[in-house]
Length: 458
Ligand code: BES
Ligand code: MG
Ligand code: ZN
Image 1 (cartoon, protein in one colour):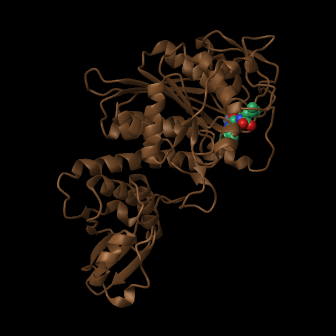
Image 2 (tube, helix red, strand yellow):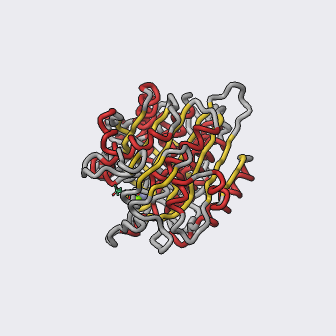
Image 3 (cartoon, protein in one colour):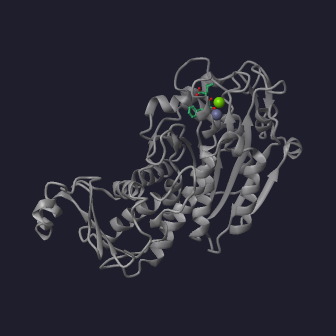
């Protein structure tokens, strides 16, 4: 058994028609090369797995096909050198397929080892693939860390636990790490973030991570990730149904963390400053109240109409702090911000807002390429009326039940210090949803590949 060689054959429907004469006639009715089809041929000295990719494959659906195949065969494949027969694919397409094979090794809830993680592939034109291997593994590492943290139950991801983890990673990757607790946040005047944290049993952890590459004149990117560890809604409490999904309200932060780790693994020639304003949104007698007027880090006052619109409060200070204290070429925030974006796009894409046309297009293209899509929505002046307050500079929600994802983006625009290249990604339904590796909704890894593709092209 241990001497058998393992082969994977990739066929589209048309390439199968041309080549099926190489296989026994009796096989023809079992396999046709359709997308996600597979078939196993085993003999004493050889195991051959046929994988169908259909006729209309793209780079990004090859990743999905590879991922599904790898996950489905997790208990059957062996961790050994595997010969890949994929003559119909270009080297870029092979890279996408292999990314899928390795992404498909993610297991939940136990991180057991999947045989393909330790498998090396060989094929006819493999020369100079080493670099691509390490890229693929780096992306997987980042995405798996992102998924692991999002998938943790709420009682396993309290602020100190996440902070410890971040501290370890900062050491491992040589990130500069600064964390401000509640008292330090008070001294700094991070009032909007603290308003959300004040009802919490946990310390605040306003976290800043910096990755610096050795490259000269590297572009600088500021990233802010919404990191609400659990969103009860606060005093404007959420209904109980599906409340457990609100452990996923840190999906912006995990995407940022995953991308940062992948970028550092690959030593990408950029500088990144990432801010994660870590807190939960709790119900307690200390919690902030609807009608409270809060002073944010940039001095603007906010009337809190709804304590469940807490993400935009934490991001307001994250964005203000970053744009005031760091000079960046790009400022991008990612957040599981609104149910409005979920109702609009379901799980088909995230909602994108940007004040710079070229940044918008760059992000759209990276979304399309990686299958972690985005669709652009407007930041028209008209929406400003919705957040005018009688008692403060702004109110945190509109009183009309329309377009809350646009309202939220309009709100955030007041905290970017006129940064000329800002994008806001409302990714509420994208981070956590139906996945191949779990029965219930779980982490999708959304955002990591999107950000990495964007960064690689700068
Ligand atoms: N975390 C939620 C948004 C969300 C909804 C994320 C569904 C993932 C799935 C956010 O903090 C929130 O509660 N938003 C409110 C805003 C409302 C009070 C204006 C919402 O969308 O209902
Ligand atoms: Mg909320
Ligand atoms: Zn939230």
